[in-house]
Length: 78
Image (tube, rainbow, N blue to C red):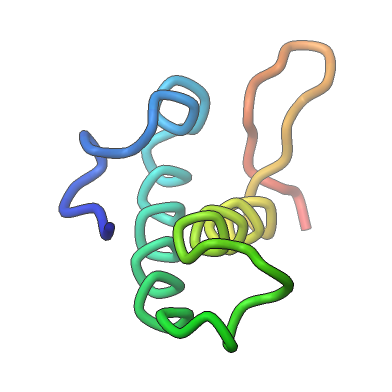
């Protein structure tokens, strides 16, 4: 189900991403939730929720990368 605000995001998102990353995640998730509402629009047997989470993380990874040493998510330089 779509998120109305970033406070509703999963803890794995809220506890790791900076606020802007959370906003990207929420927007991408909500968009994918709407776009992939029909099973034939998804890959394999992925659920609607699983697909939306995958799309959301992919969107975050376009702007942020995880620092392997600190574990923090930081804006990409490129």
